[in-house]
Amino acid sequence: MKTKMFFLVVVMLLCRGVAYAYSPSVNIPILKVEGIEQDIPPPHVPPPPLPTQVFLHVGEIADIPYPMFGSMVWECDNPPEGIEQEESYVLGPMIILRIKGVMAGRYQVNMKWYNPLNPGQPPLGRQTIQIIVQPWP
Image 1 (cartoon, rainbow, N blue to C red):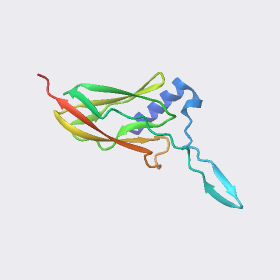
Image 2 (image 1 turned 180 degrees about the horizontal axis):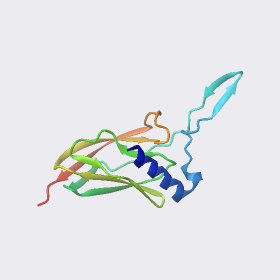
Image 3 (image 1 turned 30 degrees about the horizontal axis):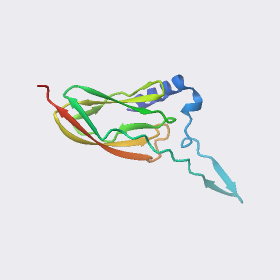
């Protein structure tokens, strides 16, 4: 998974330029006040909303686009057995999140909005989406 995220970040850098790949959460500025170092929190960018429901057939892949904000990405947080997250890719100013339905059923999938360049930082946003995987007729 780390190699996928590294590849995604490299592609973002190559496709959009360094100015768009900068994330304030990676380089948190330190302000010195009277000899005391204080962390200045990065400005919070609300995550772009994902659809609340996604309909798939078994074996089908849903492509869910969302706008690119620095190096922030949506990722499945412990997806259920019937769902797999495929490798995302960059298309112009958008990132395409790819989710595959493996087994028929209704799944609540927890998504996290985070910066893969700063793995120690907690996710800056969360959303739950319902994925309905139907068998082929």
